[in-house]
Image 1 (tube, rainbow, N blue to C red):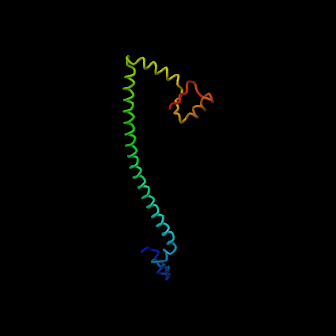
Image 2 (cartoon, helix red, strand yellow):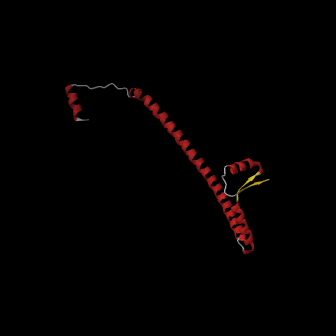
Image 3 (tube, helix red, strand yellow):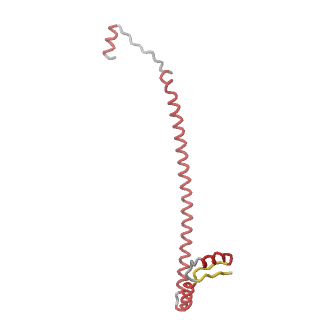
Length: 137
């Protein structure tokens, strides 16, 4: 025991503090403890939702990557086919066709289907063209 306790006993001073440790200190803290528990539960639920969104987002990102890879493969095959056709067109035997194609492409500005004839007339009236307008049946 500390030395100060001995001096209190010698003087006959009795110090007693009535505290009921089983319920008294917790009476004021109950609302705070309850609010802390509710906040902890909400944070745990929020963490669960975030983890779920992260996992589902990774799955969707994987599907999106696979789709982009498929589209890139299609684009590569189309580009290869276009290069093959371009090489065929540039052969000396096809020089006449290439010249004629270049001439026609400079003369024809736009081509419209017959269902869009009104739009073709509007473009002509607005003088919004440089070459010829072709309406196809």
